[in-house]
Image (cartoon, rainbow, N blue to C red; front, top):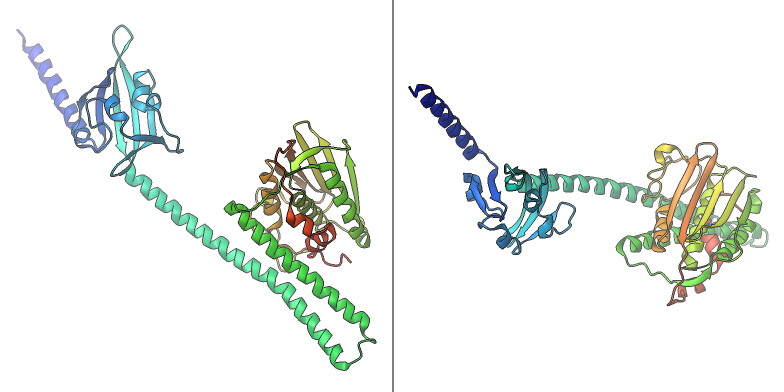
Amino acid sequence: DVTEDVVRRKIVEEQKQNLEAIIESMQDSLFTMDDDYNIEALNSVARCSILEFESSKLADRFLRYDYYDFDGNKLTFDDHPAHRILKGEKLSCFRYCVQKPHGTCYLSLSGSPVYREDGTIAKALICIRDITEQVKKDKLLRHQEDMKTSLKVQDEIFANASHELKTPLSVIYSANQMMDMYLNKGSLTEHADKLSAYNNIIKQNCYRLTRLINNITDLTKCRSGYLDIFISNENIVEIIKNTTQMVSEHLKPKGIRINFDTDVEEKTIACDAYKIERTMLNLISNAIKFSENKSDIAVSIHDKGKDVEIKVSDNGIGIDSKHMDYIFERYYQADKSISRNAEGSGIGLPLIKEFVELHGGNIVVESEVGKGSTFTVELPVKIAENEVESLHASSMNIIDMIDIEFSDIYNLN
């Protein structure tokens, strides 16, 4: 009596047919590949697929296409997911792309090895999903979000730049009107002091416009990769010390003391002296803006062997933690209000970050509200074989640089 055997065979056959129907109705490519890279069983999607498994030999087909992971790294044959599975790996949703003549396919592959009784790998069971349309859709959505962000940033840039340009122009125009009034009265000697004061106001605001235009131009060049850097072997200690001493003369009217300290008297590194000076002036001017009268600013240099560490510290108002991650972003201002304590375009810190990174260095900030801030610049100790003299640096002395950099600090003089 073979009734039970026949029944079991019918059940097995029905289960086999059901499984085959499920496999054939899958929207993903499913197939097995032996240890010689021959494709064996495959479903209808795999047979009709435009994926790279079009020949019976993966190894034959592989060299005809370029394979990349989603980070843009090119895959070698050993990195190919099918090869990795045949070497014993289990993969789940491994995403990669195949560049073919008609376009790029984006794929998600899952699979696992199938073992023989002796423990060796007999084949790989592989399931591939074509995610090209989904990737394109995601890219489109990201592009749309980036466009929205970009437009928002542009609006902020235009609003901020118009304010920064309009303010000094308004001041210059007002001062000019007052000077015209006194000139029309014909009493120049009697009003000489007032005319001199108005002339200084015009000069200061011309410096402000120059600073803003220079910073916007240089930052744009940095981001485009066109900013020139003139590297020469310089004593970094002397550059920082001289800049600090020159600035200290400008701080006397406000009663702010600036202290300089170094643990090394001489340290030669390859740098652009002009950009280092601008970096220091920007950091010191920021410290002044957000410090009270009769406060202290500390500038220090520390020799770290492979790096030189430059610190600028103040005991001013500090920076709220919610702004710490954004202060080096273009046009970012922690205080955007009209009544903010100090003027600023949100360009200075991003620009000096670019300057520092052009030297292969790094800049970080530590701050606590009500206790002050410390900006730390790390520059690598390197010696340049081919030195280049900066024509720009030689044409602008440190006094002019200070006047321009400190032009948006009110009541300094």
